[in-house]
Image (cartoon, rainbow, N blue to C red; front, top):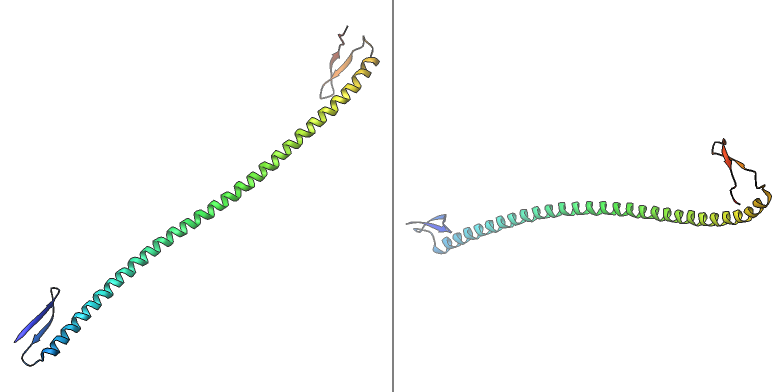
Length: 147
């Protein structure tokens, strides 16, 4: 007598029942089934490991890209901080110049007030003084028209 054992649609063993013991045949069949199940489990584990490796590689690429973005943003932040510092220095310089200009204008006004009465008393009413341009050339005369 000859029989073929089929598990999950696959023939796994041919059995002759003439002289074999039934227990020995059953053990052989179970060993074959366990071997196939172990092979299938190993194949599934291998596929799972490959999928996880692919996911890890993709996550690593994303992390590297994000890290580069973070580095770039840090550089931009440093540059913006430097620009803000320079702007603050420029603002302080403008404020200083403005204060000095105000102080200078006040001092100039005091000098003009102090000098103006003395000049009008000393100058002759009919005399006119020459006008000199920035190159030192005489360009005309100032005429006093006050009566």
